[in-house]
Image (tube, rainbow, N blue to C red; front, top):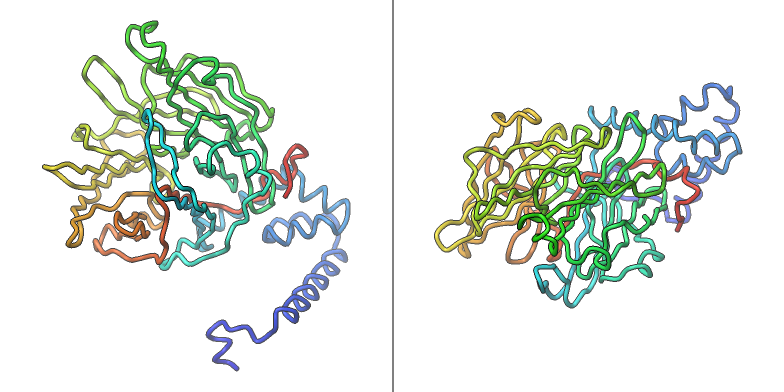
Length: 431
């Protein structure tokens, strides 16, 4: 029997386990009811998400406490502080399985769509499964394209965009932990109003205003003659607190934005890779948007970095979540490599450090595609070219470890934190 326990084998039938959990829950609930009301919030703040959601039905006062915006933020802050110490960290995996991809007019389209499961994994040695994630059935009815794209995550919110193909304007803030989501209204810049455009999206938290904000940058492609051959980029910010988009802004530094090169939220700012176009010169840099002050700034890339048509870039949050990282992947007839960079000190150009250079692997001489840094800081998640399997690369030992996950042609891996965000929103849709 003890061997079974050690091997984590259940000694109870599912029905018996369910009854036992219910009994334990009732005991805890009755105990909490017997305590003085003034200490209840201090106890609730330490409980897991699932327990808190169940406890909203215990009484009106508990419901009001748990759904209070201050309690929701305090619970998250307490959880984040614990996670900085020893608690397990999670990764959200979204994998789009299809027969292929096409790029008509430079826009990525999914062909032969099959499925796009979501799952949560521990950011541990094996990246073991934490739980499968149920996707809201109601959102599937809203989609124009075969599936949504995960733009990024922030405090338990998953930002989804229906942009894998045709122009459309379905944007969603989704919290799978509380099974709620908010559909954003349509933004001002659309194909019908401004013609063709390139778009970059980002999600961040305004700590001072206590508000989650979505940023949308659109580079207009059909108005170059108006701006001396340059493309104009416009910005618009959505406020979750207000439930609306702000005014259309033209104060973006002169640049073009490129979709799907990664967005990162770190140090209170959203970051994207952008490009200065001066005649035939193409100069990449990092465009940062401070979510609190709603102001832009530029962050320079490493001076030794050289861009050409064979180079692919991807931005990432560094492992410690205090700065940014950069993947530079080159595949040409004359050169083939993957450079992994990190900015040791945030916004200090001189602190850019090349961690390693990866060359083609195996008899096929394939070069994995970079996805993100892991929490450890010295490991990155890569996707193999041949079977699209995910691997973890230890930058120090230069050893690969298969994660036993076969991903699709479109794949995202994002840090994820369980939270109660959206639980208090009356306009959020439950499922």
